[in-house]
Image (cartoon, rainbow, N blue to C red; front, side):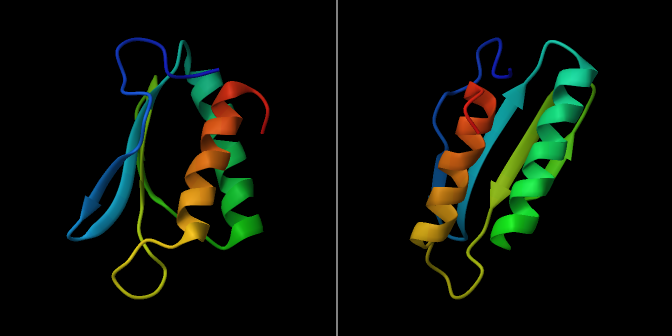
Length: 90
């Protein structure tokens, strides 16, 4: 699943404002929809709700800290778990 094409395999991290962001691309809308559904379930489970935008074959996710101005281990773990979804092990 996901990250076909030339997308960066790592999450981009910004300090101001603190953000982790990544673009995911997919071979089909169905694959993208499955990814979005899984991210939604992970969000409900963790309480972390990323900003997202998507089209037919891509999704952009941005994770912001829930409290304060610094990314916590929880946000970094969420990003790793999203990567595991794409890799098929999440």
